[in-house]
Amino acid sequence: MSSPRVIRVLVADDEKGMRLGVSRSLRDVVIDVEHFTGEFHVEVIEAEDGDAAWSIISEDTPDIILLDHQMPGITGMELLARLNEQKVDALAIMITAYASLDMAVKATKQGAFDFLAKPFTPGELRTAIEKATRHLVLGREARRLAQEKRQLRFQFLSVLAHELKAPLGAVEGYLQLLSDGTAAADPETVQQMIDRSLLRVEGMRKLIYDLLDLTRIESGQKTRELVEVDLRELALLSIETMQPDADKRRINIALEAGDDILYYTDRSEMEIILNNLISNAVKYNRDGGSVRVTIGLSNDIIDIAVADTGIGMSEQDQKRLFGEFVRIKNSKTRKILGSGLGLSIMKRLTGVNEGKVSVISTEGEGSTFSVKLPYHANRNTGDNEV
Image 1 (tube, helix red, strand yellow):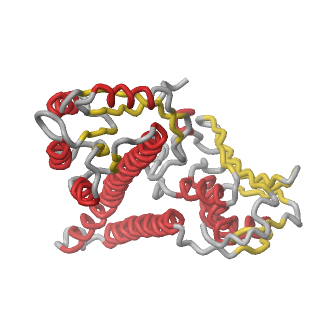
Image 2 (cartoon, rainbow, N blue to C red):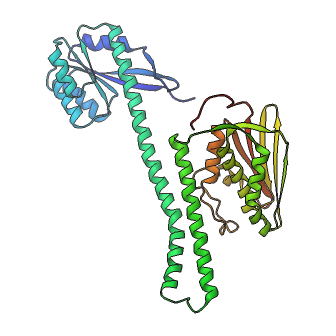
Image 3 (cartoon, rainbow, N blue to C red):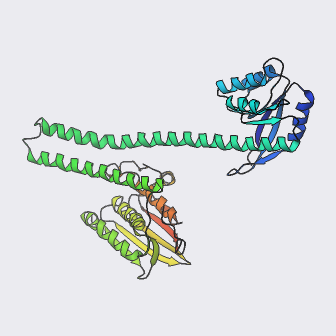
């Protein structure tokens, strides 16, 4: 069970009765904040003047500060100016018996969040604290998410640069050898360099196309055209696409599917899902192995399963498999090209269709990927964007 969340409120006022009144009014207050589970409990701290308040703020900054305008030593307005100058992460509410429009404007310019004129009722105080709490919590959450987004963007670009650096370096090295004439005397060597360069370029092109797909999905700009598609037909097209690569390695691909499994979805999304499943089953298979594609419908759930007799993977690798830029790297996968984005895109598109994807795998024996889709989940929804 998580510990209760606390909003620390500092009341800085030279009138003891005011401090006690605020403490009593807020003693049992709990606040609900939209999008957050659990309640926020209020804890009140007291300071008899501006100097004591600044000492508390400097040592352990509270969340909300109730500032009396007139106090011995540092006044409320001076304290407000300090909070603003030092960008203290707290919301200030001015309280004063000398309420006026000019005072409210001046306090707001200095960074005050709200203004309470004495005398105020316990209800007015609680309303002000609740409003400040919601503003503070949601603002902090927005900043946290923005920082997390910046960090993820940095990590994304770092991984992208890493993924592009190796193939670019390889192509550059081959071109330099061709340019200085080192390999010109051996046509076979020249052809090998050209073939390897083309293979690297193809890998980079695949990465770029996958990135574009992922960007369109993430931004919500991918337009969906919902139509009824024949899953057996789409699976046959995917198998046909991968058949040349499978034939080169004597990999047999078999399909078991009903003739009338029609699914209401975006055709391109389902093509991407099936292409990723079947291409991976071929790429990570052993020579002379097999791929079995099954598509079934039971209890309004469509089950697409692709089983291979390939290299398989460890339980640890399975847990991180659907992340972005995740590729299982070992001696068996070293020469297999890929962007590391295919399964991540497939999982997102499965989610768009309100489905789930899973994998069962054993090292050295093979893997089975399963996509389960609710048959009537997106029929006639009118939802045309990812």
